[in-house]
Image (cartoon, rainbow, N blue to C red; front, top):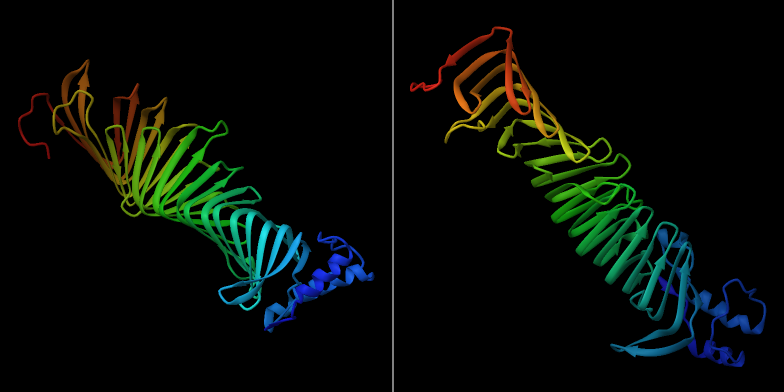
Length: 393
């Protein structure tokens, strides 16, 4: 790769003849004597290299108030001061100060740096642009606006041809139209931000249209698939919605349909209730949980309202469906080798224990209190009277 030499002394002399150090707009026709110096600038910033670089458009110095030669670390560099604007294809970078390192093939922009292209806008304290590979590094109070995304971090990198985004330190990604915000130590986004990933103490917050928190999710990794409106969290996952808290290894959360799928050792706690299975679906309505669906090794435990220490209502089956209304259990359906054990009370007085098994068990509640138990398919049941001192198997 080589760069056509840039003779800033010649350029400055020509500029003085024009009695101005201000740049002439790129749109000027390069036929006059004054504009000849700008032709040199355009030529000097045109990079010629093998491969992809041959197809890349030239770098163009649109504007700079002062042009200087300067020595930094033994290297003579080109210093641009005041109202600096450099463009390349659809890309424009403007700032108050820039240095062109020809040997290193890079330009460092500082002081009120603003970058823009056809996809995004970026602001930072400092931007280093690597000419040959068309990539860059932004540092200090980085802010990115792209479509419906707003991103913030301390340091951001764009890979070759500005394809992928890598974010570091105090990362925040906010998807505005879906009211989804993600934070963490590191971030990644593809070119269109249809896919984004947060790693390291990752946290997701989904808000409603009024800005109220609907759900929060924590994990070591959280990915968001913008086109299909769902998030995947993995490794030590925690999900919280109102009085419901769930833990698992992997979680899928669907922001539009408002439901979550918990996989690998999922457990859900609601008040004093506990639900476990191989997989658990949670469905939400407004700010409340609407139903829980538990599959394969499904189990549910809840202490009876007036029970003693160690007493637990229990359900087991291949599937357990728990439906809620007005924030209270309305009915429960247990299917496949279904078993239940319930402590019975009437006006806070113990009425014994009901143990049942069958293909299907249906439990109906009123105001959160058990009213009836229906068993079908190979039904078996045992009733233990109040005060039973023996073993309840």
